[in-house]
Image 1: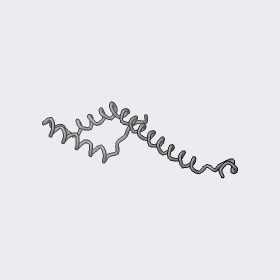
Image 2: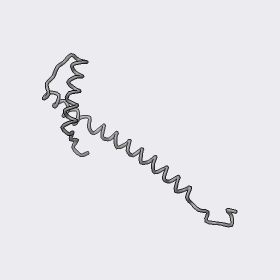
Image 3: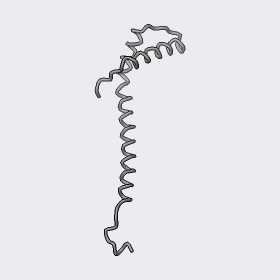
Image 4: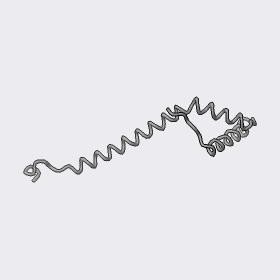
Length: 86
């Protein structure tokens, strides 16, 4: 898996969400640096699992679409024995 890099806006948003969650749910206030460390830890420890789930979802979508295409192609087939099809 390629290294997961979050853009600055996403990282800032996640940082704020983590800090707010900790205040609301655990009555714990942490700073920006601590929240960034937590983001780094979660990304490195959980990132691959979520990446793999995304790949499985994409594979399932492609398989469904390929089934649809195969059905359409089957419907386009022409009889190869014109005498029998009468």
